[in-house]
Length: 517
Image (tube, rainbow, N blue to C red):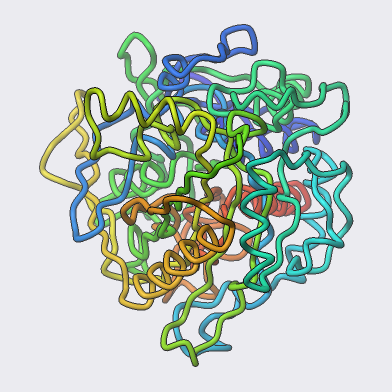
C-alpha cells in the first residue's frame, strides 16, 4: 500500500529532474523528488580534487564490457544535482542535421522532432540558466537568441593554440558556457580558478543547486535523499503508472503513489529501473529498452611550448571552440562530426590533470615533467560523434544489489565510422599543435564520454521507448528525461539539449495535465 500520494514523482535531481520538478511545482503540482545519493548543499562544496571525487558515481555497481566499455564513474553524479553538479558547463546546441540522420544520410536514426521544434526551448533555457559566449563569432551555431553574457576571457593557453588553427586556415570562436562572466540573476561572476569539477562553491556555474532546485523547493516541491528507486508500479496491464517503490536511507521499503511519474535518473539507472519493473521491461513493446547506448569518442591532444601558457587559468570546460569539422560529408569515407574544445584549465592530477597527460612516466621523470609542464603545457579536447547501434545495450545481469534486484550489464563498441572520425580528428589536432609551435606533441588514447541512449525517443512504439515529449509509448503517465532519450549523439556535449528537452516535457505535462492525472 502507498504510504502517501503526490501529483508527480521525479526520480533524480540532476539537470533534467530539477528543471521538471521546478516547472511542475511552480504550476501548483505537489512534487516529490527522489534522489538516490546524499544531500549536497552550497556550504558543503569545497574546491579540492579530493572533494570532487565524492561527487562522482557511488551508486549500484555496473558491469561493463565490449571492445569499448563505457565509463561509469566520471560522467555520473552521486547526490543532489547529479552529474551536472560537477559538469564542465560546455553548453552547445545540436545541429539541424543531427536530428535527421536517417533522412539526410540513410544512416543512424531520426529524432521525432526537429531543431526548429527545440529551438525555443534552447532559447528559454539559456535565458533562465545564463550562458556566456559570442553567437556571431560562433559561425557554426544554429539559429537562436544571442547569449545573455559575453564570453570568458582567452588566456595565453587559448591564444597559443588558436595560433595553430589560424595557420592551418581553421576558425575558432569563444566557447559557449553555462558560466557567469558577470553577475546574473543573483549569482556572481566566475573567478576563473578552474574548480568547476568540485561543484563551483560560489554558484557562478549553472548547476542544479544554483538554478532549478531552489526554484522547485520555493514552489513547494519536496526532496528526499538516499532513496533508491527499484521499480515503477503500474496497474495490472502495465498501461498506467501508479507510483514507485524505493528503499529509504534506513533500508526500508516504501511505496508512494503518484498521478505522473518522471524518470530522470542516470542514463544507466533509468533502463535498469524499467527492466526491473515488469517481466520483459516496462514500456518495452518496441524491444528497444536498453538498446542504442552511445557515447562520444574523445581524446586530448597535448603540447609543450616555450611560452608560459598559464594553463591553470580559466574554467575546466575550456576557452575556445572549433567546429570547422562538424558538417557531415560522406566523401570523407565515414559519417560523423567532431569538434575541438580548446584550453581546459588544468590541475596537477585527476581527469585532465597534468600528471595524467603522461601516464607512461614514473618517479623522477614524472617529477621533471610536471615541473616543466606546469608552466608550458597546453591541451584541447576532441569530441567525436558515435553512430547508434542496436547491439550496444544495457541488460540485467546475474549479480544483484543488496535489495535483491539485478544489476545492470552494459555492452558497447564503436562503429568503424566513429573510429575513423576519431582518427581524423587526432591527426588534425597534432597538426594544429605543430603549427602552433609546440616543441613536443602527443595525444591520449581513445576514450569515451557523455553516455546517451538506452531509452530512445521516436515516432512510434515499434521503434522507440518514448515520443518527442519523453512520454513512454506504452504507459500514458510515465515520462522519461535525460540523455537516454537521444537517438543520435551529434558531436557536442549533451547537457544543453537534455535540459531543453526537459523544459519541453515539463510544459507539455503542465499543458495536458488533465489527460495524465
